[in-house]
Image (cartoon, rainbow, N blue to C red; front, side, top):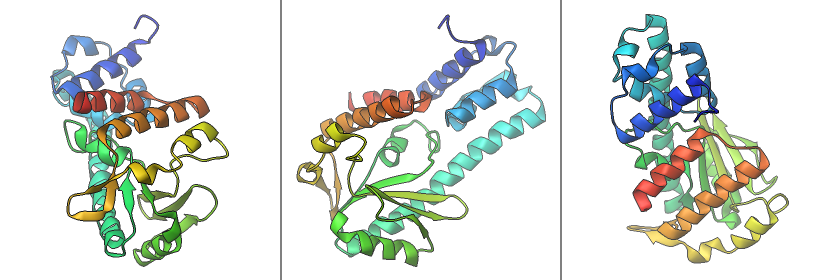
Length: 244
């Protein structure tokens, strides 16, 4: 911790308090630099999580109204975004289920529900793995739902967007073969290891062990390619608390 700035230490402390649902000590927020703290939280997509901890402090209650508004707006937008994306994801997966297209929600769609509070884990997009033989049908479903195909049949995932906030990445493979050859080979026949969800024969999921390994592999992919951030570490911590 001695190599971290005061702002970085305060952010990590707030995230720890949020994850443990404890009220932060006001003494730890002495001389807080609000702009620096908010910028750091936004850069790592953890502003909602940090805000949920800040709201339990006297320091935040006594902060400038503009400061409080900035944090609360970020938190409320994250909560709203999660609610809206959850709704569209349910519609999409029901459409795929009815069409007999096997599919599996990935990463954040699962992890977000393991955090202590709804909306604590911010969502940028929604990732779903599905049957590559049904790619055209999935595109048609998205078009009917008002999405545009921003990327289609280019590599291992298609991208669909709808204003103002909806963004889906639909994967036909878990890793790009041209970039992550070893991981791509390891997960080439992943469908054979997936389990059906109760009452949803076309909705599949990892075993807990395979989910754990995939999240670690995905984190390593990001770290080796472009680096990673604090939210990856909170994801791993939450996963450890949930799975063991």
